[in-house]
Image (tube, rainbow, N blue to C red):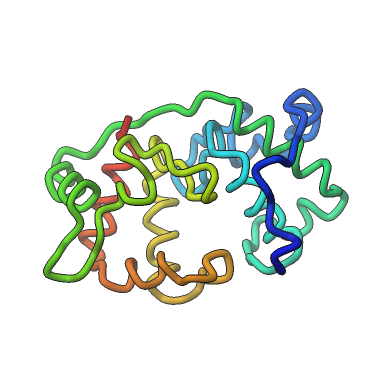
Length: 192
């Protein structure tokens, strides 16, 4: 995906048109984008630029998600913009942090781990987990913990790398152990 393919902040999508296109998405991502299954990401409230970038990567095959194969084949770029606009306008639901993961998750999210060279998540994803829309850093607040854990483990192993040209998430996730990943994943699920 070249620079010309990167979404710009000024691209527009129509949420109402997007609503007409998401019926098939509801089985995994929920009718309003709030996934009911922990393995599927919630899309509700996710920032437009991030969603559009991910949809384009999936459609082009640059981001491989087995369950998404063929799902976007009949959609054009305007459709992807409309779907992104629809989901970005929905309200995301916040979950609850598992009590045994709260302390470590909070520490890592807000302070990182200096000994391991792990920066605080707030640097890119904001103190409330809202992400950074202009930079296309995703909203994490309320995200499904199983999905976040899988994403971090995929970054750590290098299986997920194509959407992050600077490899920031790969470098960070590489330094996290499974316990830290589970704690962070639970923490962001309840972050608001």
